[in-house]
Image (cartoon, rainbow, N blue to C red; front, side):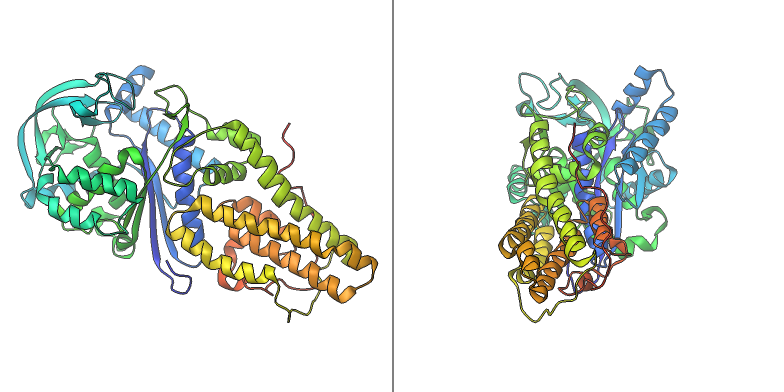
Length: 509
């Protein structure tokens, strides 16, 4: 990432199981990816943002049977619901991938055949504890009281002849990859993966003989491809791997995967090995984020503690929810979800700090300058200007390190400094004393600061940012701006008429 060099940027979320509807945990990860996509578009990068649905799992088949619906009909209706939910929540993805789509099947077949030609696929008998919820085999040491620690259910004992992938062959390459400081983040999870590899990697089963729902194994049509081997390839499908699309050349080398910590191992061990076997490079980065929890447990439909992001957004607004989930948890850590904390953030950070700042600033321009941005002498450097210039590069660094919460904290410190500037400079007294030149200078600085704030918060709160932009008189949407030009001090055009509109973050009854 560089503000002065335009790049290709490929950002992905996990693809989500469609046995049920989206919850706040899914929204958390997808929003984090959306924020990165919006920021990179804003600074001029060419962005490709992908999300989608994982449909070839046993959970899908079970959910369809429970609903009494044909699996294809079930997957089509649920995938549509997920895509429409993400659009309703203002997520700006460029491609929605589905693993039941013909192009994904072609990608899976192509990669698997390449792995087989490399000599990395073989057949043998396997048995072990299999958790349908996790879609993976669990070791005895991973079980808690004989149950899956995530889903609190007893796994099934499975014994069958499968095809295996030679994961153990890539032990050294994976160690080298994980020792690259930038590949797997945060460091705490990367270190867990290094320890896991050092214990010795086992080859993994990549087919199922008893499951009939999924993609037939191209080298043995009597078995279907294991859902995780199938699902990971979605990141290539979205770039047209199956037909050697130009997007593969442009974007793959800059691929960044955001995933939950529970699937970090698949993405930092199994996935890179598959790619190396197929003659492809591993992704540029994988970041394993933490979870919103309820009473210390992961939010999930199976545990009955899921929170509907659409219902939250209908009450508080999409932007308020986006702000809260990114501000409340340092990305990578866990935190309990709290409606009380959400309402505190809404009233304090959003309504009082930001909403009130915009409202009082517009009122002063309307009252003292007939609603027109004054034309000041900008030869004097103010602390507001100096801090705004520094913040541009602080924000860039925060995005590089996935430090959403810390970035928002820095932006809110700047918002509070504008409020403090108003209280210190007392424009009402300057007006009373008819110190017109100084009043013009102070009012302009306040409004210029608000323009910069709108640019800073746009990736996180796009609707709110554009509302601020319109109210301070801009005829443009932020998406059309040249970021580096717009964020410079003095970019606010004097003589522009402000357009005071609705109060941001009105009181919630």
